[in-house]
Length: 237
Image (cartoon, rainbow, N blue to C red; front, side, top):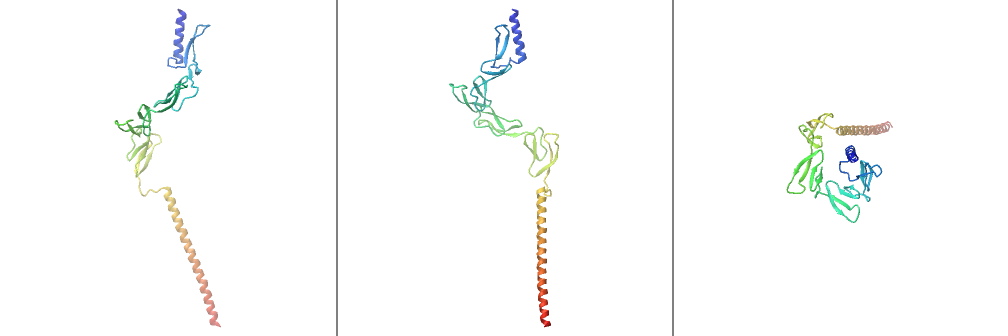
């Protein structure tokens, strides 16, 4: 009687301490033949040590699936069996999306023809007359975006067209505090560089024209001087 009670108490203690009460197909219990003590061990087809026993699938599992029991593969959440072969181990050969057609952008298949938005996104449009009913998702910001802006991606606000960021606070989310109307007087660094380049080109062109004019005048003066000298000598003769 005491031996039986001892084993029951031991089993409860081990079960609680090691977390074995949770279903784990890879853990089995047995009595030691020499001491009659209840012990836990990894069953055949599993690897590791108690309580971290993991099943092994000899030929591996196909994409979008995982090994749940020795030589048994199951499709992940959002996928269903596409092809199987009961004469092989594991029998699962491939998995396909449980949502047909595929879920819209920024969402994923959570069950058979059930799409849900990813973290940071919420439902934007649904249509109960089609499958899956979720049509689109939109980003969400933990606090409303300021005036003249919108939530462009999770917790990121962006100013509307024609507006530019006015105040930013990197210590909060979203960090955009306000937007201001984009004035035509506000010029970018690229515009300034282009203006400087144009001015330099104009100045260079003016200098070249002046130099060419000076050279032309100098040439004409030399010709006039030569012509005048020749005429003077002729008159003297």
